[in-house]
Length: 144
Image (cartoon, rainbow, N blue to C red; front, side, top):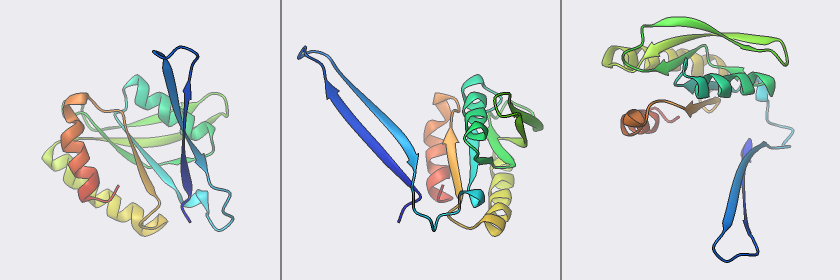
């Protein structure tokens, strides 16, 4: 049983030229799933959309990965993601998406998976559109 279920709904308006669709991700009610082991790697921080997504993860009680991928021109650093609604925070090391940075991320992923399990790391990507193909290959190669 999957821990998450992707729900899609399509609704047609009265006009034949207008339609809308929405997609939501919901936690499964499967009692055997332990969400405390799940780690969310939000790539693209310190950008505003990625940071907002990371804050929303904290707000929902999810744990962030202690590292994430950032742009190749951004210096490696550790940031604190803070959600003011729940007063929770997490430190995240930002690693540039360079050849050396990707090797560091692969090494960090191995350590994280050792502690939380192979299937308990999820990536959310808010990086630059120019990085989408390389990131997609990276995610596929690393089973993210």
